[in-house]
Amino acid sequence: MKGKPKRREYVVQGTTVALGMLAAAEGAQAQQDPAHEHHQEQAEQPAAAQEHHHEHAEPAQEGAKAESADGGDFTEYSRYKPSFGGPPGSPNYLGKLVPGLRKPGLAPVPVSTPYLEMLPWKMVNGAKEFEITCEPLKREFLPGYWMDVWGYNGSMPGPTIEAYQGDRVRFVVHNKLPEATTIHWHGLELPVRVDGVPYVTQDPIAPGDTFVYEFDLHQTGTMFYHSHIAMQEAMGMVGFFIIHPRVAHDPPVDRDFAMLFQNFFIPPNSTIPDTQKMDWNWHTINGHSGPYTLPLVCKHGERVRVRLLDFSPMQHHPIHLHGHTFWVTGSEGGRIPESAWLPGNNTLVGVAIAKDIEFIAFNVGDWMFHCHMFHHMMNHMVSQVGPRIRSGASVDDYISLLDGAPEVQLAKTDAGFAVPGYPQGMKGMRMMGGEDLKKIMGRREARGMRASWNMGVKGLTTVLRVLPEDLYEQVMNSDEPIEPGVSVPGSGPGGHHMHMGADHA
Ligand SMILES: [Cu+2]
Image 1 (tube, rainbow, N blue to C red):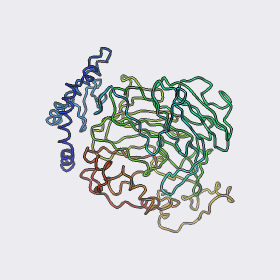
Image 2: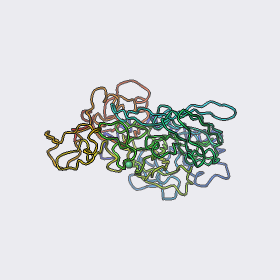
Image 3: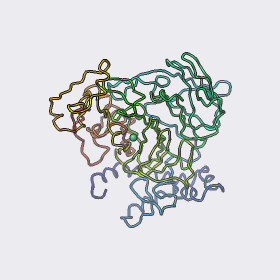
Image 4: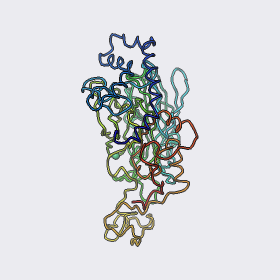
């Protein structure tokens, strides 16, 4: 960072004043706030937590030391720049127990699941009652690519269920699928008759029928709901079921995001997933492929939680975040005790497993946040039949489906096919431009990114944007135009944002 004065200047300009005020406010708050004192006094509070709240009360000192550290002293942790904290085992080591900017002891922040609605409820006979309709629907994976999938209430994945420990919940489930279904509540400890397994715990819900599930929630964590019929799961029938504690976990987070990863095989020129195929060419996060995934935007210095869920048929996803070290703090089994949290930059999320990660967003910029499987970092990986077909390749699959298969040219004459074995020029992928591209580049969450950012974000890829407070306000809460590239200080505006698809490689 020191070698890049431009970037440093930017950060300083953007945040010094705010930081000074924040530090002063926090210090004052720590002295005056009775809730904070009470929190420190609690006898049952672990020593580690007491220490970090003590530290929280003296951010001014933290800032002063960070300024003079000069590489010699690694023990101070700064929420506003890369730093070590430590030693390992201490509460501020790699930001482990450094709290968010929010006060402890409050209700949790609501979870944010980009592109997925919250499932509404109303109180009926002492329970939160939710209506769920199982149905076929269309989902736009990328602009112009409308896929025929199955899901809930018009959404794939389904809307997010957000509830609290101690709630009694009731789900009135309507089946508008052409076949029978059930809903299983994954990770929940509940009476067996509402476990949602066809034949084993209940009769399947026939098309047109309604079934009611009702149970109490005593757990917390990142759970989910899904059909318990395998081929329906592969059509997309899943959604988040997040159960918050009544009081936020300590240390409190300022943001709580959730991302659900899926794979589908959708043959070229088809819109229907082939659920029996053990090959995958479309990859989605909350129902969208990169760069149509929604950037996660947070403010510099915040503590952020991201809940990761893999609901792919067969494939695991090593989820990698650039520029930050996170701690794995939870699973579909609930909160992990602090002693068992693991630091990492990449965590393997297995099929039907949830992992919560937390970190301090100390590093300003637009950071890649993605699955690290190479085939999951792009769309439309197709072999045998489709865009990659060329002379000498097997056409068995194609020939066996002559009546139903789209027309495929066996000889390609354009230059992109001149290099044998070079698959990246995906000739079957439709070009995108104009209105399609506006759908991607015109989103509020992408304002101020480099003009060419979309060329580097594909498949199971999104971007974590850590913005200084003033830029965050500009991006998220104003409509004034923003210069491209301003969120990657010193990098320039970026090239032209281009059509995606075939010919950029
Ligand atoms: Cu993956």
